[in-house]
Amino acid sequence: MGRFILKRLLSIIPTMFIIVTLSFFMMRLAPGGPFSSEKEVPQAVMENLLKKYHMDESLPRQYLRFLGDVLRGDLGPSFKNKDFTVNELIASSLPNSLVLGLSSLVLAFVLGVTVGTISALRQNTIFDYGGMSIAVLGISVPLFVAGPVLMLIFAVWLKWLPTSGWITGRQGMRTLIMPALTLSMPYFAYIARLSRASIVEVLRSDYIRTARAKGLSLPVILFKHVIKGALLPVISYLGPACAGIVTGSVVVESIFLVPGLGTFFVRSALNRDYTLIMGTIIVYSLILVLMNFVVDIIYGLLDPRISYK
Figure 1 (cartoon, rainbow, N blue to C red):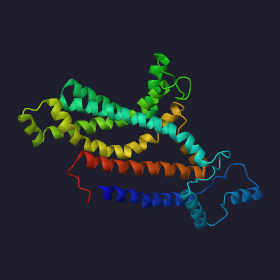
Figure 2: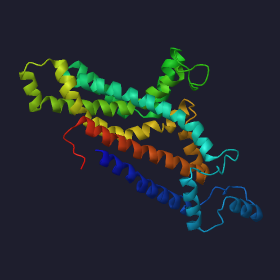
Figure 3: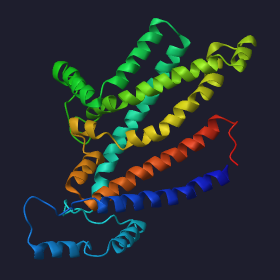
Figure 4: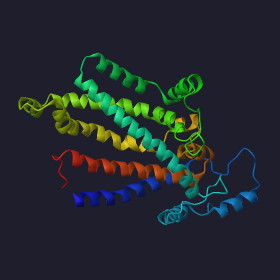
């Protein structure tokens, strides 16, 4: 298994190289630029700007320069946020997105597996229908609807939670509840449905019938035999889902005024801030690749039938 882990770690290098290369050239070949605006800029000023940021060089040379900076950990200055570098902007906003994303992921996983397990054990009962109805609701309702509805109920009507803010403010952790709940809804729904279907399938397998025939209690069968095998589809879903949820939702961050990385990503795309766009793409891609790597490792720990050769 050690060789497999080493190979998977080494495979991250060419994967990130391809992502960075394609993103760089696709962005630079698109029409427009970071200094394009409705107001006409004098030619001399434009030339000085291009020279300052080395954009007067040939595209291959710009690419090699950028690749060298990335290898040194320098993502360059932001074209639009002139007082900050891309490293500083990401360092200040990524932790907030990580806190929101990880909180939402844990909430979605715990509630999803719990609801899915109860629905599988109580098939065709009110618990099953109720749990799956909530799951369908979580999939169907978009985040830009769920967020304001939760805000209306818990902040405006009941006055239990603040409408916006972040955990660094005076309201503290209370500001995290509604954003995390909103962001976790679609992931909770998918995990609940996957858990139910997988647990139902495992419960019908031969080795579970054998365990019941031996007189093992339901809790022992459930936690020792069923859950471990039934979580494999859920774990495989958590790979890409974790990357999406950890990086935070732009919609949720906008609704609840969360100072996360998603806000900078949208703003940089609208402003054609090349360096900030590339920085966020690198961070998002690296999280996705690392999460898939972690999922592969967990797969082997949960299912001994998987061979790492």
